[in-house]
Image (tube, rainbow, N blue to C red; front, side):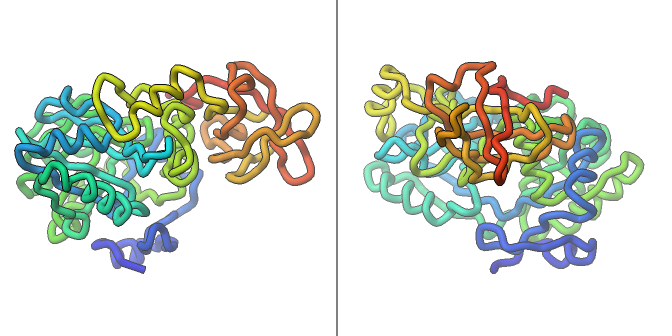
Length: 361
């Protein structure tokens, strides 16, 4: 297991550390529900420094990104971020990612920790055609997510930039907590506002300490990965390895909005055909109609008890106080309002297919 730069800080704070994607990571401090509600109501800080960062530069940087990603990066202006994915050649997804346009001919790709090596090999393979300048800077940078409705107000004293003037999926590069050239990005994965901070490993402990001093009057707390998972699920955001993977297509997963067929990218013809034909299954969101907690791997069944799919993500929503989840079902059962059943141990609990997000603030 590898340690992130703030490993000792988390231990001193009493975090429960668990192996995740090859890293020792803080999964919780005082409990999932309390941490979840802190982010929904005030402000919390996640250390997500295990994420991977690739710098793509040079005259052919955009051409490479256009080839390997599903979204249209040509639309990006400097200061824009874009959610996208790497389609594979078999209608699956190598990974989902965020692409940042740092300056002309330079992009930052932020990928999932569990896929850093796989993603790097994937991009490198296709770069043989483009010869862009690729750098894996994952080991040099830390990433803190400061999330919640009070995040901007709590952190404004730490920067000369107007933090309230960073719209969703935009970013600025400037001073923060005494350091220059910090990326401040409104790309959080919780649905409660705030921003993320990309900084050098050598800077992160001082930045962390100053964040907590600045946020002391706002009830700021450290938040673990367990609450990050329940927060993203309440918003219906996909998690790689659960809701999307090498065997799920972006069309099936409801990610057609990041799949732009106006350009040539890996496997675009097959995905366009799947969209035209309509996929045989779709990722749906559901709420349990009775008490129960759906978990990843539980069967989704029909009224006869026949298995029709599998829960990919599930939890007891701290905000809704209901069991919520996502999973793949046959397309004909994906219509809003459809009744399905979740096999929770020996009980088939009725559930209703609903529109995302579960949590609407």
